[in-house]
Every structure is written in structure tokens, then in C-alpha cells.
Image (tube, rainbow over the protein chains, first blue to last red):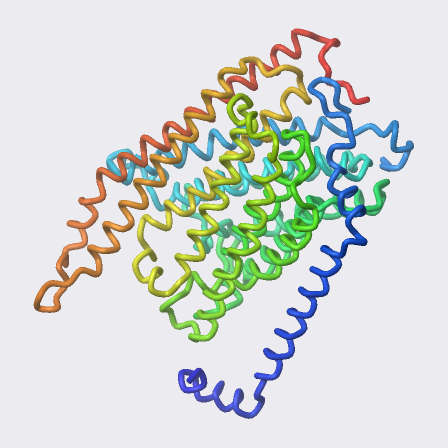
Length: 68
Length: 476
């Protein structure tokens, strides 16, 4: 039991204000955010966009001595 | 100076600031590693402190950690950021702000070297510097942040490449970490009292301490990896899609991992467990990033045999993978019971610092040098440096693993009566001598490699000066 190891003042506070729901809701929100972002990242429609983005570092001339 | 004075095709970049940070990186690498070698010798052979209080382990150790983290690694990151972000944004950074950032940061490093040996410290690990220097760090950091976001605001490329996101997490999070952890009530010019007390103080300190590893030594270096590895391999990153999942998963998980430094302490159990769980979950994005880096070399693996820059970068990324597997293991309570306070932790840290930060920095510097000054003076020294550094790390890390396991097992060994098998602490310390000597030789080899690199770069710059106006130093 977590509550049993707490300082009595904190235990009373934690019993008066049970914030367990906050952990559940935030976990759920972050899982949804992760899945949504993964869907954006791996959506085939965005494939060309990400491939273009991946080529950005190679767009400037950086041959030795010839770099800007 | 306004950075949007010309169109993208004719933009000039500020490469002088890159050269300044490059030089500072090399200088502080040698200084920081030299102090490390001195204190490594002191652990094997205590008279090496020469009976001078300013040179004792307790004074020099924070000097070593501050020098290698904030001076060597910090300047290496700034070198890479100023080079890559101008090119990724196709816009010039602000000249004056860049110089205030450079000279301010070097001033902070010098003031660290002038205070720590004399015992002026806040006694917070990786945050030892006294409060006036803490304020200077905050001010210089804000100057850097303004320059950074100003460049982003005026960029001529719409998409922010993944390296920029990693740099952004570095700029923002380090500011928050530093300011919150450094909050203190000054008593005199050199002394202050932290705002927090007891367990809260410990938790704030290790929230800061672990995220210094995360957001000073990991995310900006991943940004460097995502820029300089594709550059060196001459092909885009293996999976850009993976890189954006990598970024968000890594920054989201890392910020909660700090409590794993406080297992078996007075910290509430559930907070300790949260720290362990988030640390273990970190394996996923860490290894996703490592694989993304290594697979970038698909079809170019033959260059690993011939190109020393690719060797530095690949070994760097491999050490990243090893230390990000080892770290989560060490945050498991039962493993931590054995590893905590032992030299295993020192081995782990150096597998990350020498193997990951050091090798990525060296690879980046060797890639940049011909682009900043012209041909590197001696190419074969680059390969020699690679082997000195790699063998040095292996000697260092393996000896600290073995030494750490030895002392961890001896500390907790009990005899048939249930008493400590080795009640005399000094007996255990003496058993570590061969490991300390091996570590000293490994560290010395790594330092000699860095000295060879510094010498090579000095000759490279001399060659460029001798070549005069024909040297490819002018901006397009």
C-alpha cells in the first residue's frame, strides 16, 4: 500500500483528494496521442512528404572545400 | 544584422562561429580529459594529488565532469548546431548573439576552473557551480535560445528537419532544468542555500541530473547524428518516419526517469517505481534511434573499412545502443542494489561519454575540418586516433565493469554467521587497484588520441593559412 508509507498529513490529504483518476486519464491521453502520431507518421499518404524531409540535409553542397 | 538579407540561393552562412566553437571543443576536450586522467591516477596512486589541497580528488572531480560535459560536449554540440541549423534553415544565425553566446560560454567555463579547485561549490552533482555563475549560465543560455528561435522564425525552409527538433528539446529543456535546479537563496557571494530541502531537494537534483544526461548528452547528439551521419554516408536517414516517432517517444519518456538515481532511498516507493518503469520503456525509442542511425549505412557498409569518419560515427552509435541498454538494466531495483555506488556506474557513464558523445564529436569534427579549413593535415592519424580511442574506451569500460562487480559483491558478501565477509572497507578498496590502473591506461590512451587530433587540427589550420587566399574558407 502506497498510502500506508506516507506521512500522516500527506495520507490524509491523499485520501481526501483521490487523484488516481488523473493518472488513468493522462495515460489514456498519451496512448491516444502516441497512436495518432504514429498514424500520421506511417500513413502512406504522407510517404512522399517524409521522404522529401529526409533528404533536407543532403540538399546543400558540402563537398570538402566547396561548401558554403 | 538581419538574417534575411538575401534569397536562399545566395545566403551566406556564419562559419567563423563554427570555427570558434570547433577550436573551443578541441581545447576543452584535451583539458577535461587531462583532468580526468589525473584523478584516475589519484585513485590508483593517491600521492598523485601531490599533497596540494586544490589538486585533491574532491576538488578536481567536479572540474573534470563540468569540463567534459559542459565545455567539451557543450562546445561540440554548439559547433554542430551552428553549422547544421544555418544550412537546414537556409538562413544565417545572428552574428552578435552568436559571439555573445560563444564568449559568454567560454567565460563560464573559465570561471568554473577558477572556483571549483578552491572549493567553491553548491555540492549538487553536475550543478556544482556557485550561484553567480548559475545566473551567468541562465543569461548566456537565453541569448543562445533567442538566436536559435530567431533563426527558426526567419527560416527559408518550411519543414523543420528532425535534427532541429532534437536541438529544440536541448535548448528548451536545459533552460528549465538549470533554472529550477539552481533556485537558491544567496547568503554571500560564494555561498547559497537551495530552495528545497530533504527528499524534495534530492528529487529535484536527480530530475535535473538525469535529464542533463538526456537533454545535454543525448538529444542534441541525436540531432548531430541525424545531420552528420547522412552527410558522411551520403544518403538520407534510414527512416524519417521512425525518426519523428523516435523524437517524441524519447523526450516524453526521458523526463520521468530521474528517480532511478534514488532507489532504496526515502523517496516514496511509487515514485521510485515510476522512475524504473520509464527507464525500461526508454529502451524502445533509444534502440529505434540507434537502428535508424546504423541502417542509414545500408548499402554503404564497405566504407566502414576505409572511412575513419564513418568508423567514429558507427562506433559512437553502437556505444549509444550499449549504454542505453545498460542504463535501463541498472535502473531495475535488484540490479541497482548491486551496481549503485560502485565503479560499474563510472563504467556506464564513460561508455556513454567517451563512446557515444566522444566518438560522435570526433567523427563530426573530422568531417567538418576539411569543409572549414581544407584537407586534414594527416589522414592516417585520423585512423590512428580512432583505434587509440576505441581501445582506450574498451580498457576503461571493461575494467570499471569488473571493478564495480568486484566491490559490489564484496560489500554485500556475508559469512556463515550472517556477518559482513569483508567488514574492513579498505580491504575492498585495495582489491580495486588493478582495475584502477587499467582504467588509468585506457583513459590515457583516449587522451593521447585527443591530443593527436588537436595536433592534427593545428597543422590543418597552419596548412590552410600557408595556402593563403586559395584556402576554401570564404563563404559562398
